[in-house]
Amino acid sequence: MNCLNILTVFALCAVCNGTVSAEADRGDDGLLLVYKDDDIPVVNAEFTFFKVGEISLRTENGKAENVRSSLITGISSIPEEISGTQYIDAVHEAYESGSVQSGFSFTAETDESGILFTDKIENGIYLVEETVPAEGYAETSPFLIQYPDISEKGSRVLSVFPKAVPCGELKITKRVTGDTGEKNRTFHITVELDDYEGECGYTQNSGDTGIFRSGDRFSLKAEDSVVITGIPAGTEYYISEEEADSEGYRTTFTAGNGRIAAHCLTEAIVTNDRGSIPDTSDEIETAVYRILFAGSAICTAGTAAMLIFKRSGHA
Image (cartoon, rainbow, N blue to C red):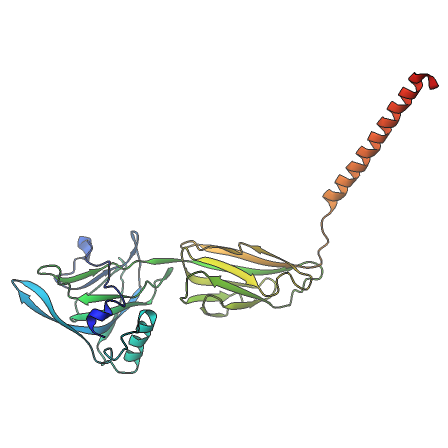
């Protein structure tokens, strides 16, 4: 696979060469990454830059031109048919195994303005990943960049504007009601996220924490709860329970499915009820009213019949 073939795996960053404010101007050489959620800076997001290719440049009439590109040792052995997440995994493996010499990757994070700038970047093609997302955000999609930007005459600053992915949280609470509801029984609840295969975090009210992926199952007893964090805004979720509507239980889901909102906590409740005495007071009152109404109607009809009987001369 050569560098041109790589571009069929990922498009070179489509959010490059934008306009930045004067405060972001750091000089004539370097990489400038601006990371914002609309106008809100995304702070302390960590990005890792994995070098995958070399480029050789020449200058003609004051303009840099790309004359040759090649994959670095360790990356060139990745099969050409590998793409997408498999390609990313293969790059990771090449770095972790030592196939790629040290010093070909570097890490930096955004500042309080949502800006990352470095003038230490070498010429080349890089796979860029957000390795530590900012609080309240999911990692943005990986992308490729080529440094320097040879499209701007006399400039070696590459400006990159990755798209921020705000997140929300989902809290699920388990409730067991009714005279024969088993408060100490463990129920098994599964949460699925539509079209999202990334990793989220979770925290249970017991203090247990861990990694959550769509389709994972939680074991909860009455009044237990779990909060799933880092779900991309707009993701649809679905909650199900293994024991739902079985063994005499009636199961209800409050907000059992929906869509995650940015920077908000969505709360869902799964209730299993068994043995509750239904409230029939309204039904009894209605029945009594009907009986009284029927009795009144009978009396009225009887009185009317007696009057007719008397008027007909049978008194």
